[in-house]
Structure formats: structure tokens, C-alpha cells
Amino acid sequence: MPYFKYKGIPFSSEFFSEEKLSYVENDFQLLDDDIVNAAYPKSGTHWMAEVLSLIQSQGDPSWVQNVPLGERAPWIELDEDLKIALKNPPRLLTTHLPFQLFPKSFLHSKAKVVYTLRDPRDAMVSVYHFIKGFKELKDLGTMEEFMESFLSGEVAYGSWFDHVKGWVEMKDRANIFFNTYEELKQDLRGSVQKICHFLGKELNSQQIDSVVENASFHKMKDNKMSNFSTTPENIFDQTKAKLLRKGICGDWKNHLTVAQSERFDRVYWENMRGVNMTFPWE
Ligand code: PPS
Image (cartoon, rainbow, N blue to C red; front, side):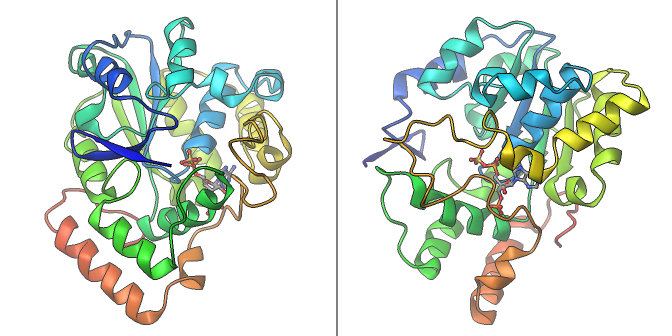
């Protein structure tokens, strides 16, 4: 499957078009009551979409149990999802876009963004497995080969480092909230409470319990509306890969050699030195 580059960032031509990416960047109007779930791929995007959906429905699981995740929290940059995004206020939107391709209208809106990060080594390993399910996407080669593509940003949505740095530059805005996959794993309830506070949503203790329960790995893995099984078979082969694969922190240790992990660290610090935020994996 061919890739094309939009402003230097690789995209698969099966799911994206230059025309729509340009529309999203320049013309898509974010509304003040929009909530945007933003993350680099494989960083907990679906998990956060589930948490935000459950917060929207005040802990009532019927929405997440009956409506596919892509309809509840459509990806603005995906050709198909954009149509849903445009007709669905009040809107919960999702994106993997780097900040420089995110709608410019954000800069003068009060739309709230929840940006989720994950240890890039785990995100990289997760992509490596997930891509095997896509029938038309090109084989990624060995883990070592893929690691080099990942480190140089020659992967879908571009460089992890540039993505994170672009979004972190927005950190002083009141309408953006940063959290990590690792924090969600460590204390989901605490994270849900912080997110509710950021969104100005008041949920009682039982409602928060329901968010936590229904956004658990096992509930999501069994929920056909959230586990990617609504993706057509001609696009994604569920027998070759799973969206909800392991759901743990540190799986990279099972995939990288000591030499590979040392090389990853070197490139990481070359890129991240001077970034004014610290992360649980550092
Ligand atoms: S995507 O396709 O880029 O949007 O993928 P994304 O949703 O960002 O990330 C998929 C990884 O998130 C894990 N995941 C979870 N972990 C813990 N708990 C819950 N509820 C959960 N939901 C999704 C999923 O298993 C993928 O990680 P890996 O490491 O591959 O298991």
C-alpha cells in the first residue's frame, strides 16, 4: 500500500487524502464545547476514547456497549470519520495528528484537548504488532529495521519526538490536559477524577466506579464496539493482530536487545533534552 507525505509526514493513501488533511488543518472549525482525544498512535487512544465516552455518559455503559467507538469519538483526519465528526455536536473527537497539522481553529477556541503519551518503546512495539493485521499495509521488516524507521520518523504520523514536542509546546494553555498511559495503568480512578475536573464534569463516586470498571482492559477487549472488531475483514484480519493485545507497561523489554535499547535511549535523549516536562519512563 503506497504512502504519501503531507507536509513531510507519512500517511497511508488507503485511509487519508491530502485534500482532507488540508481541510482539517485549515478549515475544520473546533467548537468551544468540543472535547478532543489526542495521542500519537498506540499510546492509549482507544482507552482514552472509552474513558471520555463513559464520562460523557456519566458512567452509564450503554453508549459504549451499543455504539462503535469510531462513531462516538471519530478521528477527524480519517476520510470516513470526518463525516461523522462534522454532524455530531456535542462532539467528542479523536486525532493522532501532530500539532502542526491539527486544526488551526484550536488557537482561538476553548475546545478542550486531552493529550495522552506513552513510553515510545511500548508504542513502537505495539505498532509493530498491530500493523500485521492490516491486509494492505506494507510489512515492517524486523523489529530492528522498524526501530530505525521509528527513530527517524519514517512511520505513519511521523516522528514520536516531534509529535510530543509539538504538543508539549501548548502545555501552558488552560484547555489542554496531559496524561500518560503509565498513569492510567497505575491509578485509573485518580486519572478519571483529574480528567473530570479538567472537563468541568461532576461525577459521583458510583459513576466514577462505573467509568473505571467499563474502561478496564478486559471489558474493552470483550466489547465489540471498542475492540476494533467492527473494522471490515477486508481491511483488518483479527486473526493476525488485536487492538487490545497485552495492555501492559514495559513490553518493549521482551522485544529489544540491550544494544537496541541503548541505541533507543541515545536517540531519545538527543531529541528530548531540554523538553520542559518529565515522563514516568525517564
Ligand atoms: S491506535 O490504533 O493507534 O489508536 O492504538 P491506541 O488505542 O493508541 O493504543 C493501543 C494500545 O493501547 C492498549 N489498550 C489498553 N491498555 C490498557 N487498558 C485498556 N483499557 C486499553 N485499551 C487499549 C492496547 O492493548 C494497545 O497496547 P498493546 O501494548 O499493543 O497491548
